[in-house]
Length: 390
Image 1: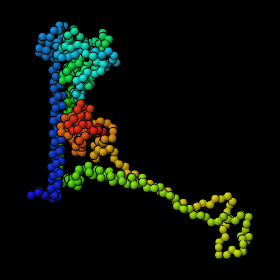
Image 2 (image 1 turned 60 degrees about the vertical axis):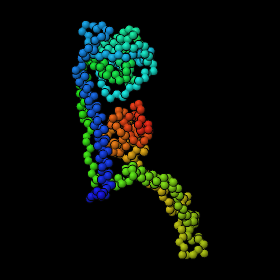
Image 3 (image 1 turned 90 degrees about the vertical axis):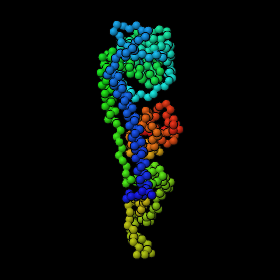
Image 4 (image 1 turned 30 degrees about the vertical axis):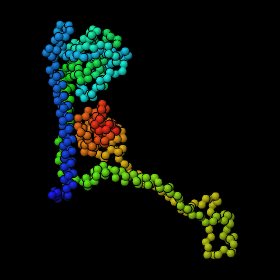
């Protein structure tokens, strides 16, 4: 038998069940994504705090080390690249960015691979042991260093070399190489504690952004909109139509015409005439108009007032987006990389929504995804349709 109660019929219970399921599903996705990033930040922090020589890192390498030189990291399958024409690269910094987007396999235009071999990071230099020889980049002579944001390429400028060169690494190893190189450079200038402090700040900021468990929805909170197919979307479309129809009717209304003017009495006799000079046949019951000054223009007795248009109702800017208190729409503005945790209460979130690492977009099947700017955006939802803005 269907369950009912003081709150009404069974549709209220079904609505509460759907709302609670969706809220908890959204919360679980956000919690999993939060835990993955927390584990990555803490791993980087532990690596930076205990940074040093790895046991056996330099064993078997055909590299002659200077007295006291320590090998931190080594990786085969690295390629030496050169750039014929390039601008001045920024100076090396100690910034750590664990949220970089995935890198592509392809090599950027203008970058030419000239050799391949083993990349070695020591406490004094970066070395490539290639088939054509050895290429060194001493930390004390580096004037510019830049990591390509879309490809696993790192370019380096040094004092004693005119042409800019660098390394192209396997995509899966590029992030680890960049972090190890930052730590090695920081160790060389005695600034490794600054990198550890930066990671501590990122961990504290991430801790403050931990998702909170949603409250439980009860059947008594179900509004009448829950009975309509489509819920809030149906109400929003009906409200938009109710605002649009009066505006269209007002624009189609013909302009108002002024009313007829009332003519004034006949022109008065000349100023020199006196009442005694009027014809005697004029009935005595009619009043005699008083003389008017010459040149005075008669004024209409009544002028129709112009019609004042009623103000057009102001409509909320959404450009087709569902009504929401978050200020999200499809019109334009700023991209949303960290959406509000209640976004799935108003938009249809796809599976693994919180695992995305881009900005908020709408896919062709109507769902929203956090894969904007990523390779294969909305690949499992029919492709990209448009961006969600705030």
